Length: 249
Image (cartoon, rainbow, N blue to C red; front, side, top):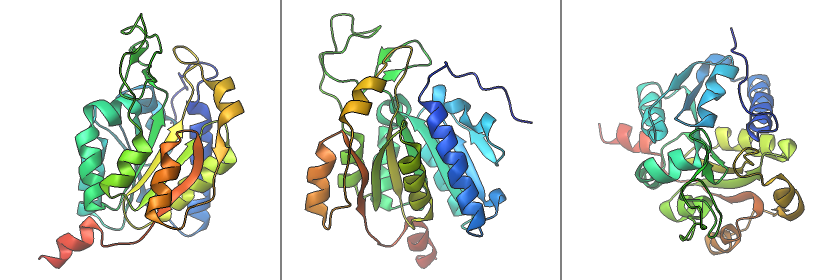
């Protein structure tokens, strides 16, 4: 039985949830049994998402979504492990796991909700909070430059990198489907407004741009630098971590 949704009214997570449900339906219509889609979530507002989908799921500790996904895929290669993580969960506590998952090309998918704050704990700044933004822990403005999650995943070796906006559920769902179907490490950064502590709805609606997938890595790096570019930034094929593990037996 699904739980009552407890996100704040207007939260960007609603769009992400709807887009993911559409993606699951499309995967099912493509012949992938719903029982093979396993959802893992970490700590943060995004962490409630497994309660709102009828899929096998696992709720892990802060920053540890990717180790759980890796273990699931190694234990049963026939599964499609899908992770949801916040910017604090992935870029603060879990950054080292992102780097190594990308480097290894682990055959899993990570959807990172990027709202630029620790929303669940009432709005402290994270590694992706823009410089100058005032938060609970930066009352005079954030003095730090933010990390660029998509660029980090790209230069770390991810073979599928995309960025999307929670307000464009059609594009988001299309990207989600392509990410799950991709063989290798898929990373999708989702620009997700937090209506309570970092309400970026109007800003993103006016400024996000859709791009065509570039033809080479250098162009992908250039496109990923602009954090308002959305679309599939990079896609390539190489040996996955699981294939490498089987080859060494």
